[in-house]
Length: 372
Ligand code: HSE
Image 1 (cartoon, helix red, strand yellow):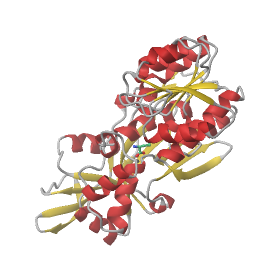
Image 2 (cartoon, rainbow, N blue to C red; image 1 turned 135 degrees about the vertical axis):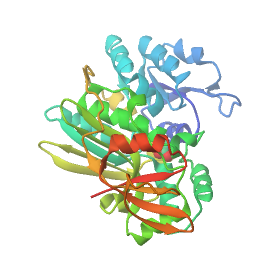
Image 3 (tube, rainbow, N blue to C red; image 1 turned 180 degrees about the vertical axis):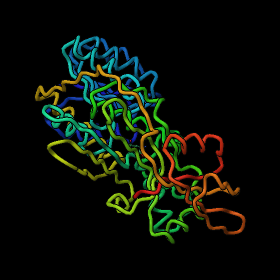
């Protein structure tokens, strides 16, 4: 199948390596930004768009613009598209699905959540006869790598982040990783597929790990809990719980380290299913991208209709939270410990919504949900 690649970074390079080694794909053109490293490289997207022989376009450039315009143009001109770009998919999935349908082509995006973990195709397989009503996950390799290194090797936050960047796990601007935006995008995609509904990604309350310190990690070790950045969701029918925040885990999640991700789903017939694997990095992500390319070659399509709207409501579930602050708050605290003016508190039971509201006005504090 004659193919073009949009982008040739960490993931693109690995996709190209795998496709070039296969007898099933013929990569004709590679859209790059500047220097030409390959005779197939071009900086002109139109060369790809107007080439009638190119049937499949693989988008691994990331970012919303011009990825949105390029994907839309390819679908409209009757080319299949495979994308790993969670930011553009979280925002425009419904539009891409409709465009693909109208133009009788496929739009596949397995690599956009969980890197090499085949979680989206599993959700869609189940959804043919069952409904996923709950999911949670560690969905960002960079932050999981940072938290694991800080916990197991006493590495500083800054050094661990630099290491994750060197290994090709982090986004071009790692703010998206450490502030939870990357997980927010992935959580939106998981919710859309799990509940077959529309989700406005900006409506998902999100707290990242950029404020975590060595003091937090030492406290968690003392309490025998492990901090993980999690996305959590439950479909209550009339509304869904959906949020991204640090969680203090004791369960299986606490053992998922390094750049690994875990995706946990629950449906009526299947019960609970957990999928674990490398969630970031060139080769694992490329593996999911190329699997999609093979699905297209074998005429496998995805049938998905995102018609319903389920509002996000995080007021239904109540938990205790960890708060690191330097000011006593009698209304909030159940108990606290103090060390050199820093307070490590456990809050009274409160809703996720209330905690999310509290942290907005306390930007220098660190919070995490105490898992029960
Ligand atoms: N920056 C992302 C991560 C890449 O660390 O998980 C994979 O989506």
